[in-house]
Length: 433
Image (cartoon, rainbow, N blue to C red; front, side):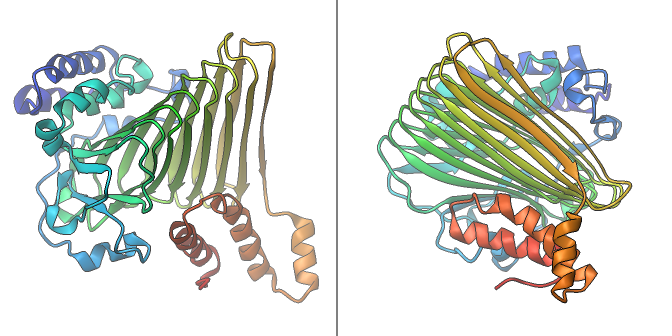
């Protein structure tokens, strides 16, 4: 096991309130006891994290100062008025950020330690599991987190504009690691949309290990759209863990095109009756990229529903993994769950390992799951060619159509159109205005 993170913890002693210190100690002890996961661990059976474990990452250096407002403009989807918090190399950048939403407190974690101590004590580190050997990256984050974002939506507030969280890595990030933490608290009857982005602003080989925790109160709705567009030489592990109370709704979307090796965990814990969880995603890989999506939805109370639709487009020697689990407790009668993973392979060497799972301990439920893996529909291709569309163009358009189907589920127009344009350009070279 690499000792770099252990040494960083013993020498750096990350700041924070007194109550957090023993939690950090326990998290680091859990990592030391378990070590990095291997493919012998069922949850890591198809993903080997040894490229991360065998690298010696130093704490990410301070930003070089080269990132300007003009450089982050493409990440705003034309919506410069949206409030945003910008972090470069794990550090909050007030000069690139903007705030000011009635009924919402949005601040860096470092500021929240001072201004929202009781909120953090109630919610920070309460959702992400640091003791499970399969989740040691959450343990590392908990032990080493320095900064991140805290979003507190007040009771009954409907936030009209999405809040944009940008985590960028510049040239100084190369060879470093950062452990950003995001905490989102949606008080009862509130509604909010968060766009959480991870991207390169010049850095090459680095490691981002991010954890997002959410608490969604009674009758509240949280939309969380997560975009991973890291450097093609980077490593990325991201975990989202959310607890839902009565009649709350959680909508998640994962968009992945970056990093050499990435792992995205999304965990929704439905702890109140009448909850709904919708987890969707799109991953588009080529070269030797590897992306692993792990989802877990726990139905603990009756009359809840969950929906999952993840789609992948894999080219060259890329490797995709989808492992989705829906767990239904005995008390969770009237559960309605549906889970689907569809993958399009564009190359003979691309591969997908998919494992949708249901564990049901209630007898009055309606749950289905399924997965498809295939190549471009030859009948559709023949039809398009018969209408005069060249073979190459027809294949590109069909690939775009396959990917665009899941993008249509995004309710934020600017974000959806921006991702559709990116996808169109990726597969056809054309920009759909």
